[in-house]
Image (tube, rainbow, N blue to C red; front, side):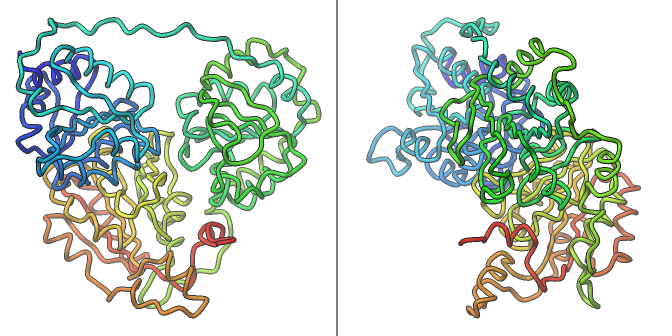
Length: 542
């Protein structure tokens, strides 16, 4: 066997079932080896889109994403999506062909590139091809984005390591019992505890719910974990800049805040002002380097979130917590009545030619099926789909904001749609991000997956308009002529509709009732009189 074939087979045996990419000479054989083993190849229009597809697929499926690109420019074209994945700790392997001769036109410093964006780097050797490929996959499965260097001369060499499957046993270090006594004491003493679950707690929803019930805690999440406690009577939804007034009030009166797999960054804590100074703050994380990185904490507990929760539950005595707690019928009613942004009154700023983004989002929430995956791009608009569109669970929300790059949402949604074709995937994007990524509509049409693209079109880079405009700065560089984006979508083979009022959403209901095999693109001309509420928080002090 050639090394490229061994790599493809080993990755498949480890669990790789879908690979996204653009194929050139450098990744031709390894990609075909994956396909021959049984994996599905999804070809993108551009490597940048392919990277975001692999990222969205991994987040939505809960498995390792695979990206295959050409050497040199194929890698650099994918760099922004790769950086987002690395900063989000997305489990992903990047098959990166490597020109090792420094004078080659294709030469780049792959190890340096991976280090620069926070990814791990592994390299395949002819003498250990199966071992190296397997190690890269396992590293990704543990929560890393891995760049796997595939030297061109090595790929075509005969593999000298004997391998014929199955996957060798993965040896893991013995689990260390987490030290939870101080956390137990804090939970026993608390009268108004709040749990904030982050990205690191996405698989711990059920045990966290049991622990919250045992100690009377209210439940909140960072944006990356939205949907984790969907349907729970004590769920406050997202903390921080997206938080409802009720969530802000309640978290602001907590006497104990436990961050589970969350670093409590400025977005989650409203620049540190959300959590009261009198509250005891606890951080639980598998990575001790994460403790206190964004704000001081009173107590830190090292360990995987699920393991820590189970250890606490094993030691928690019934009846020793929540004395005088705040889980009352009256509070439950307040959460039901005021716990969603849709319940917060607002003045509708729609006019004769534009629709208020809140009104648009609420109307869409009413007509879309409950079985949905909502994928949100970056921009001034992003709070509206994030907070007005409900999701069924944590897998139903994909939030590509670790690098805060505009233009990743559409391709991420395609990856999510491949992962969950049983759900309607909703890509919420701004007009700037849509134009950046519209080329992947070709891929969307080819895949014939149920995909709805909602463009919050304010004819501008809205964040910059609302940040710099109030100070009188010229805005010509960040505003655009009004463009018929629905017509552009039609040119790619999608269905398209322009929306200026709620009544214009009729074709959306018709599309939903049909086969949904052609993507539908909504060009929603949204009112832009003011910046979003979360943007005011984001720019505070900047």
